[in-house]
Each structure stands twice: as C-alpha cells, then as structure tokens.
Image 1 (cartoon, rainbow, N blue to C red):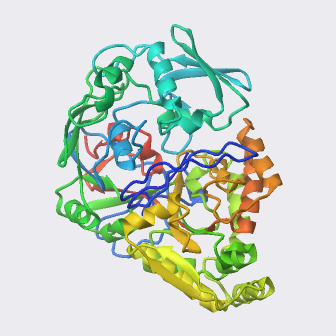
Image 2: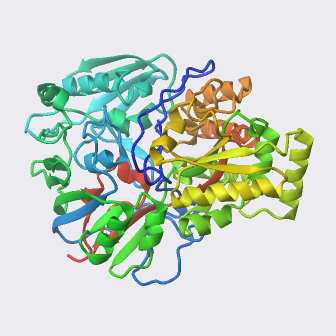
Image 3: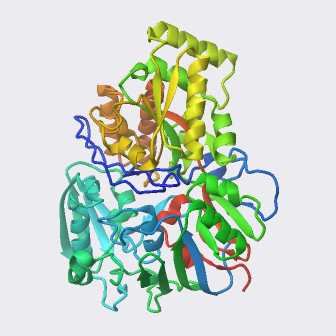
Length: 576
C-alpha cells in the first residue's frame, strides 16, 4: 500500500485511501497520499553501515545537510526506567481502528498497543511475530504457525479464531487494507494454532503486508462488542501489545500504559501521554521541555528544531519522497518535455531554501528506506538514474533540456500550470519548477489553493483538470520498491499522464509474483528505469525520518519503522 499524509508529507488533514483503477496487467494496490512533505528517507549506502542513529546534538550550530548525514535505523539502547513520557503528534487521530481510519497519527499510537503477524524492524526488514513461524508448501500457499501464550489486554488468550476473524476483517473490500488481499483465494483455520492462506498467484509482498496494518490481530469479541464505536474515545483497545490504551480524552490527550501481563519483554517506560500540536507549538513544547519527544513528520519542523539546546535529533531511513506528478492536460503530456523539466530542476536549491537542508536531492520516486533487501542492486539502479535528475543542473543539462523542448514541438507560449498550496516547502518547489521551465524556454504559472482543495487534486480528476503538474509527496508502507511502481500501470488512478507500456505492465506483474528476492530486485530495477526514463513522475528529493528526543532519553528507532514497530517499548533513560 502506498501512502501520503498530512503535514509531513505525511501530515495534515489525512486524505482517504484512493482506489486505483484496475489495470490489465496487474491489480493495483490502493494508494494513500500525503498532504505535506513527508517524514522520511535515507541514503542507503549509509543505511547499509548499520550503526545507531545519526544525531544532531544540542547546540551543534551548523544547519543540517541530509545529503551528508549518516542515516541509520536505531538509537542507543536505553538503560533506565521512565515513569512517563510526554509525546507529541501533529494531529489527533480520527479513530484508533486502523481498518477504518488509517492515519499516521493513529498508527504512531497504536503500533505500541496492537501487534501484527509479522513485524517491521528498525532496519526495514521483517520477521515473523504473532505468527511465530511460516511454511510455504508451494508458491501459492502460506501456513502461519501462531505464537502461544499471548493474551489480549482483557486477559483472554489470542486464538486462531481471532486471527482468522482479523484477517477476514482486513480483507473486506471496504476496509483500509482490503486491497492487500485481492490476490488471496481463501483464508482458513487449519489447526488449533494454524491459519492457511491460498493465493490466486504468488504474492511477493503479502508477508510485508502482514508487517503492516493487514497483519494486526484483533480480539474478535472485543471488537464485535464495541460495534460501530470501536476505535472511538471511551472504548478499550482489542490488542496484545506491550501497552494498553488507558484513556482517550477527545481534544486533549491519549494515554497508553504498560501491560503487566505482556507475553514479551516489559517496556522501560511505564506510561506515554500523547498530545497534538501545530508545527510552531510542537517546536516550542520540545524546546521548552514541555514534551519529551516526537517524530517530526515535516522537514520544516525538523529544520526549526535543529541544534536546539536540551534535545537531540536522530535521522533514519524512510521510503518517503517529494515528487512532481504531471498530468496529461498540457505540455507535460509529452515525455520529452517532462524529461527536460527534470534535467533543468535545481533540486539542491529546493533542499536548501524549502526544507532547511533536511531533504536530499533524489532521482527516483522511492526513498532508500524501501531497500529492505538486495541493497547493492537498488543502490546501483539509483546511481544509474542520477543523470536524468541532477542535483544541480549544469550548462550541458540545460542545453540537452532545451533541445528536448525544441524537438518536441510544444507551444512555448502555452503556460504550464503548477498546482500547490501555500506551505513553505511546496511554495519553494513551485517557484523552482517555474524557474526551470523559464530556463528551457517554457512558461510556468503557479496556482496556489487552500490545503483542503489541494488534497482533492490527488483523488479527483475534475479538481486537477486545471493544472499540468502537482507539487506532491509520497511514501510506501513496505520496504520494497516494486510496491510503488504499480502507480504507472496502464489505467492506474495515479498514472495521470496516461503512460501505457505493455512491457512495463508485464514486468510489474511478474515482479509482484516473484518470491525470490534477488530476481525481484532485478525486475524492480528494470521497471524503475522505464518509469524514470518516461518521467511518469518527476523525482525531487528524499527526506530523512527524524526522531526528536530529550537529550536524557534514548532507545526508539530513528527509521520510518516507527509507524509499524512498538517504538515506545524501547524508550527509556540513557542512564540506569
């Protein structure tokens, strides 16, 4: 599942999932877009180093430069207990039922309360979790062997019936995760602690989906008892995690508390209280000590906090990217003109002026946190794409771009309309796009709309009928680049330029059915080249995931895994 969120890129008002149109070559997966620049991305070469999170200590002075940071997934292990942590979100969750409201804010809370059949790790790999082990008798059969001794927070044991019911609920086409089950033919209980799934065709991403919201195990009785009220203030949770939901005061706070009968290792932090704040209030609360930590979803928030006394910032991997999404309305319908714009775009200037140095110029639409396997293959593919998306265009790039424009026959007097909202980062990107167009003999015109109207551009073709390119952002929930590239399948709702290539469609379909990691990585690199050569979307930058902590605390992951991994269970004091 691909995502977009509101003020970090994820992050602001959170848009509903948009169902992709069925494509002839492969079934597309639903995409959840983000409103604001998202939180997260990484230099995979540095990621491969595997040390603890890169930091910007208090009072360090110099502005951050994402392209020079060693971005890593973890922070140093905590040694001391903590009675309470005060944590900030950028929004109050709409619901704590992730089947019906899959927001980032809800996920940051619930990932500490609810557990999944698989678990995403800080280094963006996955491992069996509530499913203690798996068997694959053949390429279309998956047998989940369930962990014993696990209890829900009401004290009742987790059973195979609960797991079966949970998977069936997730698979409902009306639920947020329904698209993850489109290739599932059947789900059955085949033993006291065993669930068997059969597939219509091999599905390379399904186990990764079980590390996301499609793998949450609910207490069937608890959810059915709550009915339509499940996930709302005043209702208990229905999960097995290291924390239980203690209280949700609507409009004020959410509190989770350590679950004393947890089957695994007990957390060092007894209680976490979540509150939410706008960017400026969040910065103030963290710098004054009124809050202990936050995942800074907006790169501008991270830039404002950089070097503040008493706090430390950690930078980790993410799948997030800032992108330009062209439409077929005007001149950008021509792939040659799209390639020319990509060659002329000053990505380094965007990073410095729009995001305080907190994003890194990037040539593909997926952040390197997606490289959860076969990293050398993806690193090489990324380098191969760099010439079509230079960080800072030189005279040769501009000359090549001008020639592409001239040869295309596009009308230089017809304005290319750039859709944006008034946020700082997007405004800078929009102006950079206009400047790039001017450098290559074209005319750019910026159309700035309110945020609510901007969100409609993603899901409503009529709303974007007056723009030629959208200043956007995106991230995917699985650490596998192939999970992104179905956005360019023939007929996909996110393929706004009408890109159609039967060979591309066939390769995406083949990759999604290829269970061997090495072979799938090669196919993904092939697909990526076709996507970037055609400039279906134009990549701008990737953004580090940023963890901000009181300097006395440590433990949580720095990577984007915080959306699916129980980060609070690792939080504690630096000293014992």
